[in-house]
Length: 261
Length: 334
Image (cartoon, rainbow over all chains, first blue to last red):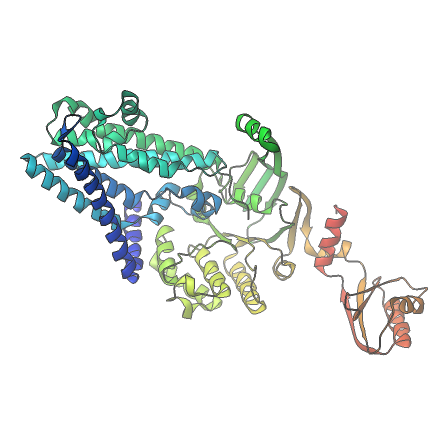
């Protein structure tokens, strides 16, 4: 309950600050939209050369991209921890976090949220509806619930992986450039995994399970029954990875060495 | 049970050293050389509720590391810490409700939002009721004179203004124990005085325990009866500031400024036969005579000096705390 109320306190505070810098806010939303448009154009250009990609049609791939945008938007809004090492470890901001009576990771999530990224949810849903109507998909009464479940699973997968990566900073001294690389790998989950080599597919499913943020759950909505078992694993994988990451985080905080003054 | 109980507290850090050359760099990839360095080396002390303690030491003596263990930020390598009857690191979230922390070089406040918004958010973080908040913060805001700053964003405040707000922010939940790490660093004299006054007032009114680290010994002199002195991770002195002065601050300093150019040699000759040592500052303006604390000697030194040169100004001082501390560090023991 306390954490809920704290969440809304921070959101309210965030809105106030953001509204003071309206121009900034618009620029950021605009650049997000532009980024999403570029990705879409890329898909369209690829399909200018071919009709199918590993047995998937253009609309299906666009649909997967649309689905991916939703958990990705939620992830970007709340798990802005890609600069955790520099901001909190090197500069020692974690000291301040640790002197406050709220779980340290939760505080960082609250401090670093970027709610304007949530606009991606609308773009994503829009893209899905567009592709879905081209494909002639129908929506059953339970689909929205499954959708929410899968999206939450996807966010937890993404969040879990990035929290685990942030935890590296607790043990390793040196700065790592692993975060930007991970953002790139994360993008692979947007495409059907059967177009990749089996090793990469295995990695994207079990080691860095980005496939559970895009292609697997989307397969359910696209009626691709061969992938259903994977699709329904999404929430489970999400929960497992997230719990693992929280556990690692709690261990990591014990190893925190603090920054010198 | 005191506010702080520390037994054989130790914190070790691994210091990695890199080998030289390209070959060394490759070897570093596989196995790295490191030394285990104890930043805090088996220290023990306890602080009673309501005490104001100065925690001093040179840079790297282990002050910050101790404070970080006492506030639950770092986990000790060995030894025990009990603060407010809790283990700071293990019970962190419950524990930090009972302490206030000010790091002089780090801000607790949100940069972009108005000070009172920061306070409001912290009030929620610490679950402070409206009633407690109003009662307590009214006094804090008045004493620190930050009323007019409340609606300004933190980034527009000067350092002195910000520090006062930081202090208020650390006290929102009215903690029984306050840690101050370099609270007056870079502040002007007026702000320093205000902060000291305020700390005294808080201490008297709420019996708040205060542990203070600072490089500015005047802070310690103004506030603390007791000092704990640290060197290379070990406590080299723990006791009253007064007895430190009595033990080390033997003697007086008499400072002279003359109307005419003076020579050290002439002065030494003039006062020969007395227990006195002369020094001169770089600009050859101020001549200082160090003597024992004895009225007779002092009068004689002054009399003989006046005979030698015409005087512009005379000052008699006790040895300053700063000098005492410097002496102790130079000799490395108490």
